[in-house]
Length: 405
Ligand code: SAJ
Image (cartoon, rainbow, N blue to C red; front, side, top):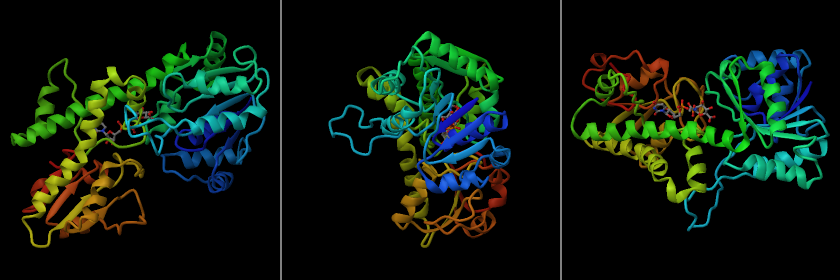
């Protein structure tokens, strides 16, 4: 079978290379010539465990090629970003509006190559209605008999960065077509390579399921973050509170942190709020609580820095979460950047998952800890988990992740 994957990022590339190693003939498409060249060379442009080996073996076997243009295929998989619109009318209800232009462009691009019998799958996280109202509608407009001999379905990706290749195969998948036959054709495809269950539903339900998963996590993290700010004012250790409360058989609180980052959990809840603004106050407030957390951390650092004439601050971690190199929408990065812009002390910045960074000079953890007056731990990377407070002596510790013992 021939597969054409639109978008070779964090979802498209792992999917394309996995399918390539499973014997499918895969053609990947990206808008960046650099990305295309890197992949055709058997190399990768993102950090993800084992992805390098998988891309190399798919390319070497001749089962993965990349270019700027799509080609004819049996199945088209759209895995492009769904960010926010850069400019939104000031009176727009949610203040954040999904930008579906990448999905529109990808659909238009594959349209001339789509033939009767083909399946088009949207994997990008999308507002409810997108599969039908954008993908199916555009294909119909271009003359395809959508739902009759061209099948369209949504199968939202659910993989966790850092575990993508494992979760692509092991996770259960939710597959919803724009009509029953589309669902059935798409379910049959995923059952060929997914070890988890492949669960059939409608396109709209599948869209809502994905947004619900990430919104649920966001609301739960917001609870933990709010709790951490309350405990701080009471001089109580939040992590101890959570650990003890979680010993209750029906309580399971998540971990507070410096804020919620990444391009999924901090984004997707707005897709719900954008469509149903008047009936989503909880989801919206959770987003706002999580978004205020970085500023709260900055205020704490400033208060501590005021105690020194020339404070030296170790900033441990820039990534949006543990053990990845991804700085997109990272609260840690935003905190460090703002401290730098406001010239708060001398910053010793460490990010063990990056060799260098164009905006910051990076130092080793050992050097940062050794020289700092204030240690600000922002990411729970494995490398930072072995410190013991006693070894840090008189230094002030701001541990936003509760990992220093
Ligand atoms: N975080 C906390 N406290 C926690 C858990 C997470 O502060 O207890 C923070 C992290 O540090 C990070 C952010 O939340 O800044 C998000 O991290 P994450 O590991 O929870 O999730 P992502 O964004 O890497 O991936 C999520 C996953 N969704 C769910 O777990 C419901 C993943 O399965 C999705 O595929 C992915 O979003 C996506 O692409 O939508």
